[in-house]
Length: 273
Image (cartoon, rainbow, N blue to C red):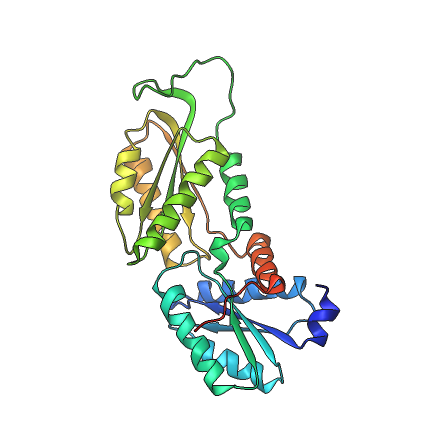
C-alpha cells in the first residue's frame, strides 16, 4: 500500500507509549514519532501515553477524531506483551470504539514482536564482540574451557507480572545470542519477574569468557538505563578480570520506526472484542 492510498483512506496512526516521569524518556518517544512520520509523510500521527505523561492515549485518539480521521490504527510502543499490551490497551480501544462509533479503531501487535528490533542490538553487540584469532581451540562442552575469544551476553529487561511476557523476553535473548554467536547468554529483569538483574550478573561473572556484553533491552533512555549502567559499573569494579560492556537502549532508532510503520501499513491488528 502506497502513501497516497493511506491518505485517501483517511487512516491515522496512534502511537501508544508507556510514559515516564523522566523527561528524557518522553522526549525520546516524540523523537521516535518524528522518525516514524518521516516514513509515513502523508499519515496523521498522534502520540499518547499510558501513565505519568499527557496526552493520554485516549486523548490522542480524541485528537485524531477531531482531525476527521475515520480509521485509526493504534501501534503499541512496548517490547513485550505484558499486562499493558494484553489488558490496558485493548480496554482503551474498546472505549474508543464506543465513543467514536463512526470511526474504525484497530490495535496492532506491539513493536517488540517485530523482527526489525533485533537488528540494532545485533549490530551493537557484534561491534563489541571479540574477533576470532583462530589460535585458540575452545571446547564449548566444558565449563572450565575459557577462551579469550568467547563472550557472553546478558539481556536486562524491565520485566512483567505476566509469565508469557517473561517467556517472550527469554526467547528473544536466546535468538539474540544465536545471532551474535555468544558462548553464554542469560536474561534478567530490573523491575518485575525472575531472575533479578543483579543475580544474573553475579552468575555471569563466573562464565568462562573474556567479555560480557550487557544489553539494556529498553526502548528509550531514562532511569532504567541509568540502573543498567550502575549495575555494569559495579561488575567492572568487582570483576576486573574480564571486560564488561553495555548496549541499549533500542531507540529512538530506525529499527523501531520501521517496525511501527510496517505494523501500520500491514494493518495487521486484530479486532478487539
